[in-house]
Length: 151
Image 1 (tube, rainbow, N blue to C red):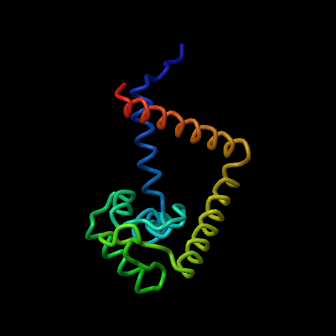
Image 2: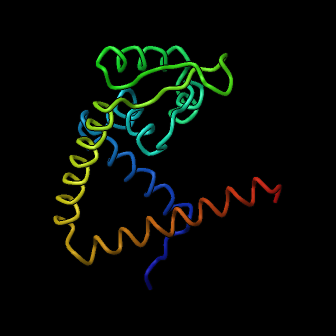
């Protein structure tokens, strides 16, 4: 009779595999999840100006790190900072035309990398991966909503 692993054993195996996945990612891929690229992509997805505090909260980085990232992006002409029209005490960060173009280039590059990966998985495995990731997002959002409601 075949031994069925427990959820605890499956959890340990999943965590090991996720650790292996992270270590298999190239530094270039990892760098797109934080720092300048992440800030550009966050602003692009938002489609509206954001405060440095909002950007820091989104990326889980300190205000000092956000300030350094924004200074660098501003020097490169990719973002601009201006006082909020609603509250002059607040600063809002926006993408410049060059920043929008760079975000579009990064998005296209990411799409090509992921498309190549999915083609290596094959149609069936790629479809299963997308199904499982979608289900995972649904479960995590439901759990967050329940916990937010005090359940």
